[in-house]
Length: 444
Image (cartoon, rainbow, N blue to C red; front, side):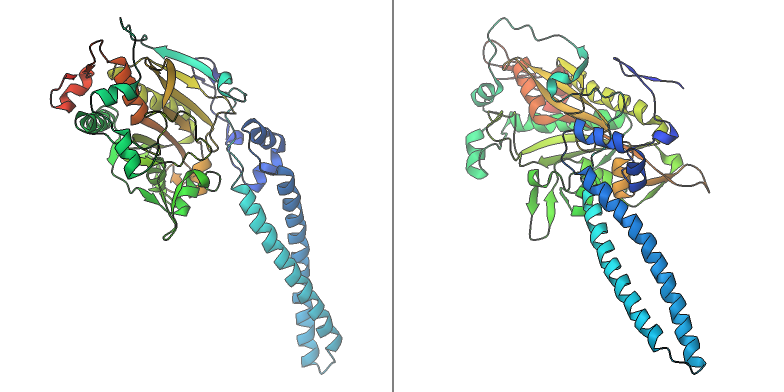
């Protein structure tokens, strides 16, 4: 089998028997150790033993219920025959009542079991690809490659919040008056920089990389959020519009993926590739007090998202291509970055494999994540019912879905400000952005 070179290891596509994550009862029963490892290695809390016990009880009760229903049908015929023949069916009618009561009790119990197991299944994480390193935290991630060099500045660089304030590009105080802490307000050339970056990235991904541009809704319903794996696990991180039960989207991944919820895509159309700009909203529950200065962690931010629907056999090649598309943005902007392969403990609930792109922040002297590129295999497709038909008349299969930030703006702007600052308090505009800034080359 031809392998795919991941840079640090050779990774082979899953065989037909290994087409996971198929987190359905049959797969879980046949791969208990694999599922248990996935839960543990991702740090999830779902109770596998409870699920297995309920599943065993359910299958046993289904067999017994089928036998009882067959017995009820037989007794019903005997009662009818007794009535036609003038016999006394009283005893058989009493027997029928007992059977019916037992069947009702079993049906009630089966309904309760199915509700509980269905709920548990929603908490089972995707199974990591075998090439994903096992680990607990960021120290266990694998650095795949670096690009570029750290900016050589002949002065002491300052952090972006000082640059933004000095050049009147970002106003955090007014943003806090309007909405509260951890929001941002761009103004003047700062706002133009945001708009320019969005246009620059969308042009690159649509014209050079072949994505179809989408302008999606910024609200999503529960089915959409569950389809991509945000619900139920991440509900506390989402902004809920409770009156209508809509969520503000945390990323355009949600509407782009759910464009095909319940669809069967013609195999000749694959891969289907979408790019979209959207505002993104995240409560960041449990993250208060972390990286709260400036643009490092905000509740609303802008992002260009890339989503792919592909055939299973090509999904890991497509993942590498997706990473390359995001890298092209950072390279064009001249930003020093590195590519990290996430370990199991850092991998998201829904991802089978993920690369993070991190840019260097000269003013803070740290790496900042600006993109995550993930292959979900058929995990999201099964939750959202997204299939494809390889050829006319053939059996349908689940697509593999991928997405990646192409890229997120706040920390990219941080890197631009801190990389292109000058010793005399000015800010050079990256050459690639000058046409999107009405020819402005220096902000002062």
